[in-house]
Length: 269
Ligand code: DAK
Image 1: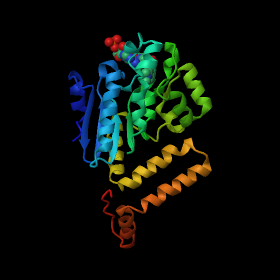
Image 2 (image 1 turned 90 degrees about the vertical axis):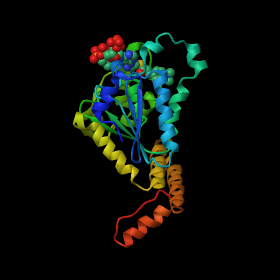
Image 3 (image 1 turned 180 degrees about the horizontal axis):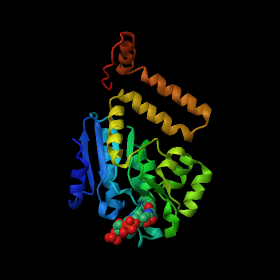
Image 4 (image 1 turned 180 degrees about the vertical axis):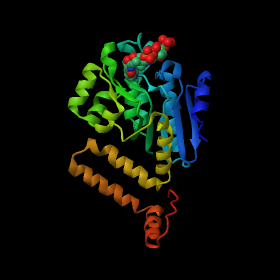
């Protein structure tokens, strides 16, 4: 069972900065460092990535849910940790490698955003496949105000999500984008009342988790790869993914159930 919002709020005192739980076929990962507005220290990022990778390997899980807390999804990388870092640290410790792990997750990831999603917090949110935002959500890449630039995909993912003009505007000024604008610009897919964001995201994740698992996985792969390919290559690629689905039991079951006018009983095979 997923801890209730209160339970997670209560866990503020605990040492668990990342709370990992299961809700049926949904693997839930919640940032829980509210006193620092869920600032993403190296340790927190590692734990998030470990948890996502663990759920990705778990056959009982069909969809992942990544959430923050009520005031903040995450207010960025941990500035206090970053301040003393050097060029040599960046090159030799290779901290970016941890961030590549979320891109390798095959199962769909739903993100639930309340409050601040700033800097690396915005980048982590954009690494999810679908975002449900509370009306209080605020997105920004304010790194320029700290003398740096986005380093976990912001210049690339924001540009792909909202286009060059708006991405330039946000990244060069650090300006914030509210939930309504994020919806209008296609950064998030749903905006709901702030207090409902987690529950709505969980509902969406449950719905996806109940879908035929291999089809969901291949559908995600097709959409995720779309911006990386020219149309001809992309359509050919989609065709191959489509062929693969015809090797699944769920394809047979889905179409048989349609013919027999009954709900399909997908088994994820
Ligand atoms: N890091 C560390 N602590 C943070 C933090 C952050 N990003 N954001 C907030 N906090 C802490 C504050 O320091 C404060 O803790 P105390 O000082 O009281 O102990 C606590 O959270 C509450 O924050 P405030 O007192 O500031 O609360 P306010 O309501 O007044 O303001 C705020 C909320 C979100 C507007 C403000 O806290 C703020 O501006 N925070 C910083 C936002 C920001 O600039 N974010 C971008 C960070 S740079 C990398 C990949 C990516 C990145 C770096 C490396 N690699 C792979 C190596 C990305 C860089 C970034 O994200």
